[in-house]
Image 1: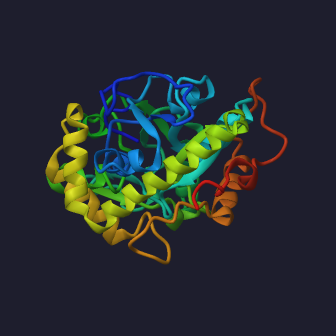
Image 2 (image 1 turned 30 degrees about the vertical axis):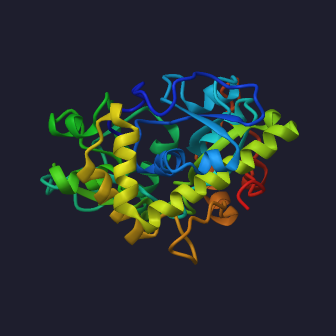
Length: 334
């Protein structure tokens, strides 16, 4: 969300683009490799993909983004969010959300802990938000500020490649972070942060349904559907391994995504946070659920629609809120 976004770091595999083979699946990351992607690297390393009969190529994040890359056929599957699928489909894309990794919010909206003038989101009124220009994020921040009694008005500054540096330089007052990665990084290495959770401050539903999406037309092929189901089941096995063997999985991530130069200490501590916080699980703490909570999804989509976030290709607000049941499916999870 904040640091080193969309750097084209080499991941696992060397081929680029989508393969025509029914057993081949190309996957595009959304960001530099981190614990959100750990199930992929574990499944690759431990042979889960091979056992499932799928040849997986993990592609580094592209400047165009995983969503555009999947829509254009550069990759078969991409890491994204359900709300991003809603935004892209509102403008004419044909994406389908097929696996939901995160089952509870992981985003945090933070100022440096040294900013004693920022105690609640109300204090963000008139401050500078370090962002990537996302209408969705701006709607969340405005709602949090208003809910806390503020004006909902703020200015923005471009995040660049590292939100931590932007905040410490004094060019911005607050920004968005993922608690399971940058939040951990802050705890380990600083600077310390003071953070707010959107759901505590008037934002409904779950804003952070992170997972996998494909192009809907790609699913018209029975061979693609079969490959996708086997791919997702193998990836889920990789995530389950990470939940049950967090240190070993973290070490696999570090070694398999070696070009990213991930700190082993950070990867291990991130997995500790994920396991203890139960960010990926529901009733069974040892296994990822993978399913999309439609009620939480729809509540958030309705909120963003009312904020005017979703526009068509002409820049006009869409006539109705995107429907989570149309945007997502659990058919490939079980």
